Image (cartoon, rainbow, N blue to C red; front, side, top):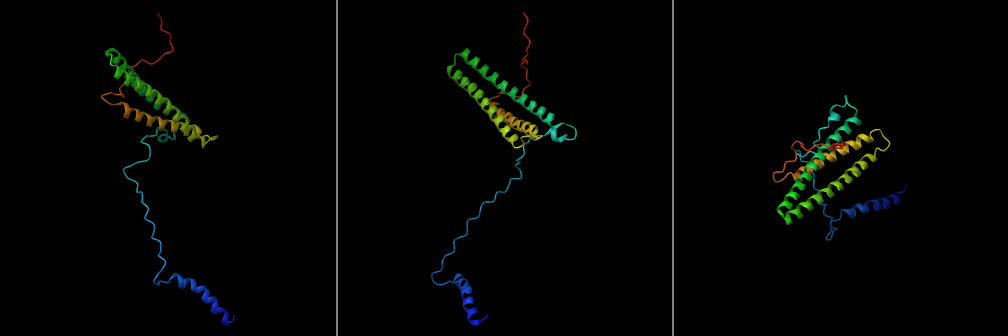
Amino acid sequence: MPRNRILPALLLLCSPLALAQFTGPNPIPKPPPPPPRPVLIPNPEQTLASPYADPCEANAMKVDFDTCYADQFKLADQDLNRLYRTILLAFQSDIADAHKRKDESQLSYDSTALFDLKAAQDAWTKYRDLHCSAAGQQFQGGSILPIVISRCMILVTLHRNDEIRAAYQIGGRKLDQPDVSPAPTNEVPRP
């Protein structure tokens, strides 16, 4: 290749490098580096897993998962129903007491609280069913679907039980006392 062609090509290649390193009186300022992003370091004391001890998983070799999780949900749901019934009875007792004392402000307060509790529980039940249905939808048609739905129902129900205890176990009210109310029966009372 002739020398007269190499020199112009070499100058064209080197000129952008020379301009980039120019530090004359008015250099183009470099943009400041972006601020450092905060680094989220997990708290070793904080656990993201549920405190729920999974008896089905602990006995994986001995149990049928479908049945085990269905049974675990029944237990969690029974606890929820007992807590809910205890709170309803407490509010109904407070309402009856307010009637006896003719305390209109307490009667209004307790009636509103009872109405709001029923509405909240109804909304929560709809949420639980939709949430767990959505969780199971990703496994539609698979054999694991009932396990995913039941496990979701267990965890959401246990969380609701904790919420109810935190919200209503106040002022000396005990929600975890043994259930002494009679179980409903389908028998017709005889005269």
